[in-house]
Length: 260
Image (cartoon, rainbow, N blue to C red):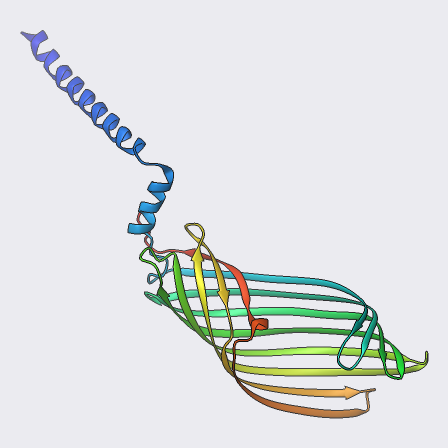
């Protein structure tokens, strides 16, 4: 009798273990019916919410240009031999206060250098120019999904840019005539920039943005040969599709409460 009561729990435990193993085997068989692409597509269609409240946003864009020119005609001068190097770095951050609504801050630094020989009728000049600057742009951004799974979306950003740059230019002609010009430039711009976001992977997205409408105030203080001083103040209002303002970059989203 004691042996019978001892074997009863063992029998029940063995039955439950076997039943659980059968259930696991069935689940594995069900998963094998779906390809990795189908499983990923299912996630994007059900649990993918990149613009929900609490999501953190980080963006990055960089450009580097190294251009050498020989006997190149420009409007007012000719580049006999010149080397031009431009560098631009843009870092962006943001936080979604509500679904599809983000506040952000962009930081931009850049440097432009040119060194070469110019022909400006009737003189040949040895020219060297370097410009360094930075800007900070607080912005407000809203996104509108273009697809049901939100992998492709349209956004509009409204930003206020505050920037400053310095330019030093040195030109030598006739071997002994030297002109040195130092410029300080202050920039303020309020603009609207639409764009498109495409998620290539779960957290990584490709972004394309274009400036189309804005008001800009530019103040330039210039000193030539440490004697002549001048100031130029410009107000610009633009509404145009300027392809030179096209920005392409990568973005990373840290999503809040993602469902796995």
